Image (cartoon, rainbow over all chains, first blue to last red; front, side, top):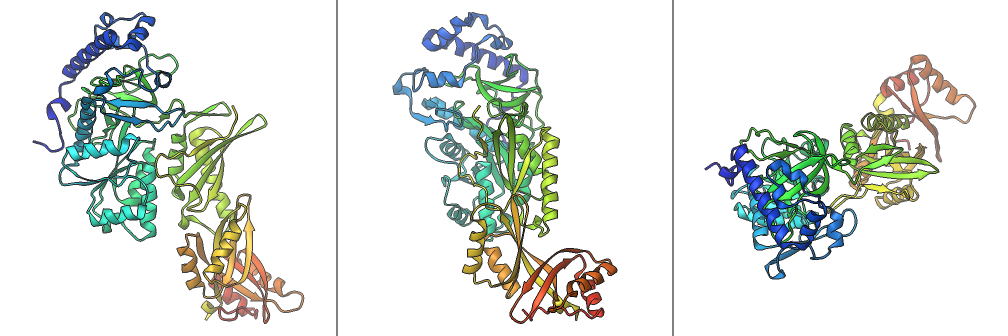
Length: 435
Length: 142
């Protein structure tokens, strides 16, 4: 059997068959929730929809959306669908925006989470020959334990390093011939910086060849940077704690993240109207989890912006793919009336070779005028001792940003090491306006 | 030998924030780097500290290892005699030879006063200045 496929029959199931499977899964899920979950029954009643109204996959659009606010209002366990005796684990979301969310898991929930990761890791060639260093935080955050069990299931040797103690992590990476690392992109950049400082070259001094990076938005520009800077091949992984945790990755094609179709049904909607978009059109992701028991999700608005692509991937998998997350509908900044996503800023900065890997975005309001300042670290080799050269470099970065954002931005040049580093999720935006 | 009149200057990037210059100066002190002459150029949010130091190669390594952005730049030192016109003569030679002076700063030591300049072609500048009879600082003089 091809080791790149963990579950070939399901991953490569014909499209039509997969859609029938998704339809029957959703129908069963909604029927079950309607009869057993007071919250969900009430919600469907108030939208005047019942399980019988779902007669095809496209009828899913008749179902109401779930939002993060509902999880908060029903904190901690009011939305759980199983008795507490069946819940075997909790995770608590990091609360990037607002109060944390509690997620509960049955034994089956953990099993499907691990299954999804086993398929994902196999699709990028991670298997029993690999040693995988999990440098996601272990604990309430889903990243550490999620990757841990996923990697164990494919037979890889797991090094549960968690975050922090970067020099020690690099030492273990060398001693134990680690081949794959899983962490946030910002932590990996930090690790590359530390490695450079102490004279470790990944290709020369370690066996590390793959990095599975996610849990925060990052751009294609950043991927290119990371790969040039480290020599390690970088893959994007996606998931949120509501889904279970990090679950889905790109395959070797690296052209979108495969969403296992028997486990999750993904739609993209217009964030304003709520209308379902055509395949390939970018909007806000909405997910229905087809196997979840403890904490069911039906049409949950994730707020991440992406497009769902439904063509068959050259790798052979029939599961739909989502394009790279371009931002969140709720992390969009409106500066002088123009919509700006932090990911656009990162993309623009990465086009300038003199710019280093760290940046911060500050928005302030002076009188009635918004002012956006982007602080960027420059690379040591791009430093000139002529003030004029440095001012030209700054103007060049400002004009690149203007080109991508259509907005005048003030750039401040910083020396390497001046801007904050992030162990876990990077928070690079400081909006100091009192709106 | 025109090379002996080309002096290595260290240029250091300084963020224009309270305490940054002090932090860099402390690092230089702790690294035992002795500054003979220096100049601070600044823009709104950053500055560039340019310094002539003892043993520039070793000092460069020490500063770089502290994670500070530092660069070696070649400058020329024109000996200034205690009489009007010595800067004019040097600038005039460069002007006639089409050599562009990018920046300069003065230095007054116990035994020697000089004006350090950065030019686009240091070796050609040294030859032209010497030919015109202008005295230049040697790396070992300061």
